[in-house]
Image (tube, rainbow, N blue to C red):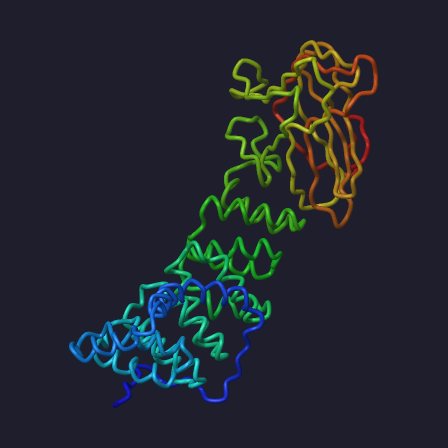
Length: 427
């Protein structure tokens, strides 16, 4: 019988398999891919005359490739791969455009430890390059045979074909290249916006800061920045205290026309809840909104309402502020209160990276709009502070917090060394 030739060059002789890191993936994929074949074998083994029946049917209708496939599967899983090989070679001659015929032949050859089986499996993918199932078979076979270049190409194709499998493929590539993210990016990640963005979040999860920054710059260069990517990148950098890098992104994409170092100082724009924008906590007994009726300037202020039935500790609203230079600063904000019931009232605060807190006076009872000033200092090596309204849990009899509070027109000013104003501690 004439052996069919492969469309693609043969695998390298002597390549060593390196399966052990991929065993879970390989087992799962093999079980899925073998289900239809095992079903055929199960049906064939129901009687002793099945083999004879299939051979007789093939004799009557020798051009029908169905019998070649059934007998090939039967003999392979009956432990007679040489017999299986003859029928499967006949199958690809009768039905050369059927990818499954090449898969059957390739798997039998690989079972017999013949490296040309890889080419047969590749032919299936060549015939139907958009079928993820065939691509997975090529990928698994390439990994079995240690063919890194082929495995890389198949992973790149699968990242485009099967978006839901991207986390698995990223992890597979990570193991294949032993955590070398630069190699993964150059060999596996295609030039596709969605794939690159998904890989960016994979890098976040693995805390690969340098590679994430490199990939971000590529996305920025191509103007492929989405809101999801922006939020993820800024949050990732801030979690790693890379405030300068985070602020450079923030200033270009969010606060391009924002004066001053406090973002949205008068609460006139949307409260973003991430990055260098205003954030808030969900705390029982505290509700908040933007007030349209009470404000110092503009149209809004931030409004907090306390139900008088709880003893909450909270920080709301608050903002991380990037400060480029060490030195002395003053935090300014206008606040107003109505019927604050607890002696442990909320207060304006500044907290530095070293944990030190500078506090304004505790707010109690009724107060018309007034400006609160808190001087603080920023040590060398620090470049960010947290500002906002804070309240500590009370242990007094009048611990339940009721009433309302408004805050507006928040700013931070850098002070010259000979300037002094207000009271407060150093952050």
